[in-house]
Image (cartoon, rainbow, N blue to C red; front, side, top):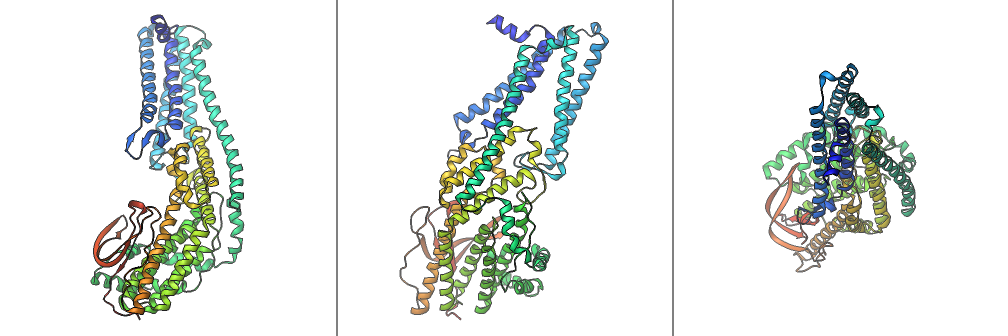
Length: 594
């Protein structure tokens, strides 16, 4: 054993040992880094979300590579110290000294280049994972990364020449059997990751075609471009004007519309609206069905093209909630119904769009409308016909949620694919221009392999899901198979989509419950003693009905909520956290509907 260890640590000479230490430190660390990225990235293997602790497997996956890196560093230091202890500067030839200077200069150049690469990552990289995307300002990063690798290789070869000259033996003898084995291992791992990425990429294209057949729609951006050709005759001037008004007014913080206000605060907001020239013009423009929007759809850029328009639509919906609040205060039934009609025009526009995010934004518009109906039911300004029409609309929305699952699921699947492919190629999810990840494919084949695996796992997940609420059940399997380093950055929250739509359905049921209460009150002069309560789909228990003092959380600030205690009728689901649904109707002093 002593003889074996001596042979391992001393090799044949201090010069060969020193060079082996350099090679082992560089290549071995690269191999271990690859292992960490590909093996440790599975969060389910490392971390137990229930207990909040690392699993034994996760601890081993973390400590084993770390221990190996420490061992490499110690071995490298030992070999370098052993070499310099035997080195005699006065006995060195001039050629040996030249190679020493050349190797040192190359090492310094490589370190400087590597430092600049880190600077670009820090300045232009995303905060969640440095290579999930690099903003366009870091466009030089791939070139500097390639230069760093070339300088590193040159410095290693120059060091080899120095050690061979210092040891007075032929250059080829510096490449001992351990060095050759390690270099071969690195090349095989590198080639294996490139080959695996190419194979998975081909499978992704085949699965994409199969997924399109599964949903009976072609699942490509090109198909959506063809679907938008009919929009080319749309009113570009209309949408330019909408955007102009939105840009002028977006700092008014209309998201405050969901908050509770004192009479003086509400009067201040009403004055702000009534003195504005922008809000009346917005209302006039969306009082009729919205014009179609001519768009130029770029490959891998679909999400970024749509996001600005959809933000405007959500903004216009929030403005209509404000109008309903002011109409409720004045008892102005016609103004309230006009605001609801304008929200219907927004929903109708989104329903006709073939784009991937439209369905999700339409769901947000429906949620804003529920908030508006809460206010109007509390004010008791709607008559019987209004209530029956709202109830019919609610049932149509619920029917759509039940029968259009495949369309919604298809939109979500395309959203996920567009999200990944867009982030890989040209833009991140918010539309920021980025350095395409494909430029790093041959520099960082680990990330290429991770990305292609994400795409394939995503398509497998949707091919196996028959209904929307099957997706969350499949997510546990996905968590074990997807490389989660990039999953957080490249894949949207589609796994929760099924739960979101179940919550929307429950909200609609709750609104129908309160509409039935109000219809009964209009006919009999009092609320019914008992009505069937909606069943919470998550807990399978009926919602809790409260009539009296309740605590509500309403959005007041963009990043926070504030609690209020008010007199109200409230339906609250027994589920907690993100699955909770609460619909609250404030109790008004108004006695009759107008």
